[in-house]
Length: 113
Length: 113
Image (tube, rainbow over all chains, first blue to last red; front, side, top):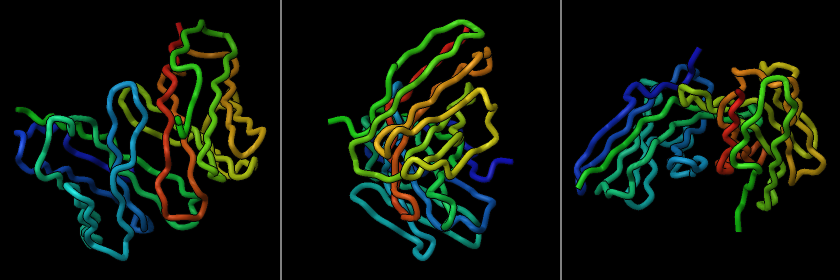
């Protein structure tokens, strides 16, 4: 039973354009959501997070949107750069869960010149 | 300065052997985790320790035994290795009860032949 899903295994975007990565979840108890970026042979690196009391959080080129009614979040990267090419994981946790993260299966983003 | 470091990076061994993976964090976090990334790239939690106490123990074979000598270290010992144990194992650290990101090590790729 996968509680966090990323239905697009891959995404290709041109440099300078917007990248939109999507994530859906099924557990309505999740109240904290994160995006991680992962390069080959490295561990996941934290990118940006959002609490369920907000619907948007922005950090430089990265913005995360949360739609609680739809149980959906998205990560927008604008403008996309070649260095953004990596696997992006969506993750979620709930209060009282020991800060345990439940991950999606990841989306491979490729930013082309 | 590596925040979460795990050794070894690669581990190749035969079925039936016993092996250990070590993890150390210098972030002052009180909670450490082991995650497993399988062949489908799915990151799933195995264990979590808070101040040397086991707080999360997902459905993992009892051949896997975590050990935390202090809150900065969490080692993973695996007995009687099986082919299906081949995966990448990630150590992470964070703060229990806080809505804050986990920090991951670079992973240990275990190959059982």
